[in-house]
Image (cartoon, rainbow, N blue to C red; front, side, top):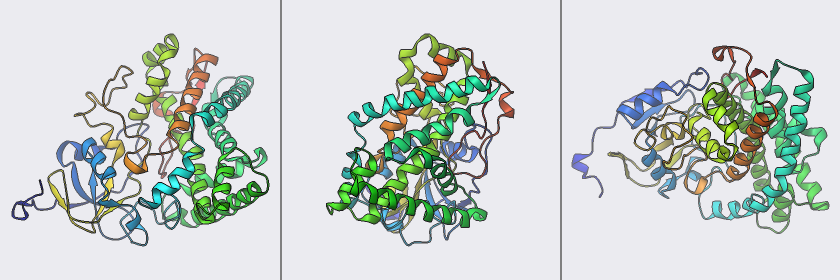
Amino acid sequence: MPLDPASVPTPPPVRFWPVDDLPALDPDPFLDELLREEPVTRIRLPHGDGHAWLVTRYEDVRFVTSDPRFSRERVAGRDVTTMRPAPVASQTAGLQYIDPPRHSRLRRVVARAFTGRSMQRLRPLAERRAAELLDGMERAGAPADLMEHLHGPFPVAVVRDFLGVEEKDWHRWAETGEALLSAGAESEERAGRAARETRARIAELLRSRREEPREDLAGVLAQAAAAGEITDDEAISLATAVQVSGGHAVRNNSGSMMYALLTHPEQMDRLRREPELLPRAVEELFRYVPHRNGVGIPRIATEDVEVGGHLIRKGDVVYNAYVAANRDPEVFPDPDALDFDRDDGPHLAFGHGPHHCLAAIMARMEAEVVIGSVLTRFPRIRLAVPPQEVEFQRRGLIRGPRTLPVTW
């Protein structure tokens, strides 16, 4: 039932959230406080204009991300308060800044590449690539850096195979993915240059697929563009989103998952004893690992909407904190514990609603391959330094280890 205008509570004060770097996998104390005391509040971020609502509770996040009265499309062109000086993704093409029905049309095209059949084709390639990389780490000898030998090159190789990028070019794609997701005003020029280089590289790849069709993502997008289902600009933006999330994000998430296991030896020992538990363990790791700093793309209320007892007015900006929702004690009892026996609600690491991550099927496969390959090859693997000495990313949107020194 709508709130009675006479009983609408006074909006909470606007809090500045600098989104500082955090140690290792520590949850953000700001989000923890809000989840306990003020789950629907207002914030101001380091860049942009004005303020925004921030929603942290599990049920409220699911509501906002699935209700059509909250629009991503209306963010385009607005100077909203944000974490970085320029958006990572194009605001005029692609899936991130559009609503149904256009969003549904583009999503149907990309979904043709993210199928069970395509993952069956890709998984043996991923397993072979992981084995080759671990061969190299074993030859190099202990101690070794897992980020350098596995978590860095592995997801880039997988997304390269998925997109259809030639192996000789993979390192350049990795560099642009890092630049696209770097944060802070000092990186604006670098991120802009990386975005232009990425678009040019993807445009060239799509042109080649029109001349030589293949069963990869570039081939799917090139065929859809040639048939008039999507524009060339949309095809480029879609491929860019997959490149960034499939390379940079998986690198950091899988590294964080391995760090979590290395610092929870009892859970890692259990996975060795019960390898059939791996898919369930991967789901819990996705919930447990704080995969990003701050928040992602906001939404705009298209009419007055009540959320968590507050009235969000038409035109207001709303952010969702998925990492906070994944630690909501009302849904996940003892949320800071890594527990492979959970039987709680589904996590929100891949989002919710129409913008739920299409690449989730691939990210799950990659996590299973990485963790399974490491534990099989190196059953006695352990950190080579104290946990507090592991260096993590700084000033990035996606959290994860910079280095992960291990021995075996």
